[in-house]
Each structure stands twice: as C-alpha cells, then as structure tokens.
Length: 283
Image (cartoon, rainbow, N blue to C red; front, side):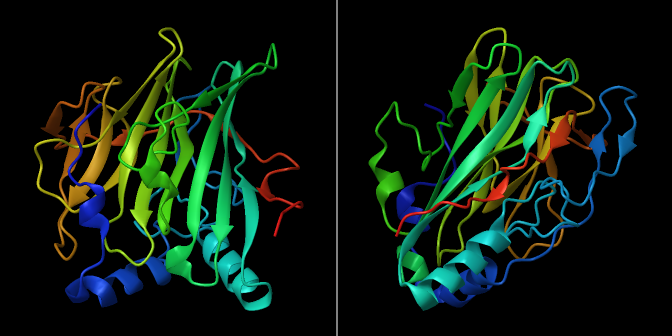
C-alpha cells in the first residue's frame, strides 16, 4: 500500500477552515482550456465541447483540473433531489476514452447517494475497461486512502460525506497503459486532492501514485510527462500560494521537480448515447 500525505483524520473540518472549505467545495470553479493529443498525428487539438476532459463543457471542478469531474452534476443533482424528495440515488456515466489502437475503451460509472444535507451525502465510482474485440469487462480500482475498492473492504469509503471519483484521463501513446484521475475528499472539508491510477495492459496491474516527500495540501493530476513517458505530472502546492511547482512521479512513487516538462494525453473520447445522467434511479 503506498503512503500518501494525509489520512482520514486530516479530512475532518476544523472551525478555522470551515468557511474556506465551503467556498472550495460549494462554489466550484471553471478550469482553463486544455487540449488532448491526436493519437494519429501526435498534434494537440482541442476536443469537442461534449468531452468531459474539456472544461469548456458543462463541467466544473473544485481543483481547476484540466480533466474535470462532473461537479456541476453533483451540485445540481443534490439541489434538485434534496429540495423535492430529501434523499435518493442517482448515477452518471462518463463518455468512453478509446485507446489509440482502438482495442480498449475506459469509462466510469459514478454513484451519488444523496441525503438532505450535503455533508451527509456520498459519491463513489467504478471505472471499467472494455475490450472492444471480445466485449470483456475489467474493473480498475485505486489504492488511495478513500478508494472504493471492493477487494480490500475499505470501511472509510462508507462514511458520510466521502467523495471518491475515478475517471479516465489518457492512454499512453501506444495504448498499453491507461492513466486515470482519482479525486478524493470529503464534503465541507478543505482537503481534496488527486491521485494518479496507472493500469498496465501487459502486466495487468494497477498502481496508485501521488507526489511523495513534498509539502502540499492539494495535488492536481496533469497527464503523462512529455520528457519521460513512464512518469505522470502533477501540480502540487499549499492552498493560498500563488506558484505551485510541477512534479514528475514514476510508477513507484519517486518524485522529482519537472521544470521544463509539459503534460500530454492520448486517446479519443466517445460520448455514447447512454453517457451523462442516468435515466433510471432509486429513491
């Protein structure tokens, strides 16, 4: 199990940060424009507005990530359900991210357990890998502190207020590895952060990494490193600081400053007819 910079105890809100927490999590910000690399030409081209990896769409993100989670859906759905029914269960399916060789598609199903009070609600997710030739499905899970991993029976993910969303970000250029963003936090807490989840097709193994031996309160996953294809890039820093350095992290968690590096992504986003808010739900 990798070591991460905070534990569940550090997620509990303190009076001095409560107002900041509410501003951070209840007033989501829009991220800056980002591009995704064209796997055929290697050029960077803007994605369509329907792409959830593109912040010019309907999505916004608490960390201003270039690969936003459907935060507007979370907030709008809670406002609607809590004001009309009090509680309920809703689902959201992300568009598929198809590998450059066209053999695999990755997508996530997000589950929102809604209570009348936001801090008592809970968001979890499952990410699927579909072999487009055989139709076989695999489940990819993270090993971060609040990960919704059915194999280790993590009790903390069942606590009220937990937010844990795993969404695909990029394939590697050859399509043999998948990079996903694991966003974690607790409603009404100022401590939210990203983890990188890397699935290796040849080894059929998954690793979860984040910047190590670095002082930060929040980390934002940026994509694969352009200088080293095996590394992933984060921007990490302390809330309130203006300049957050960029860090390169390898699959073993070794962390180095990434001065002069830049993030890159590969793959093709496909918005299936059943993507977005799900039509069927339970109260």
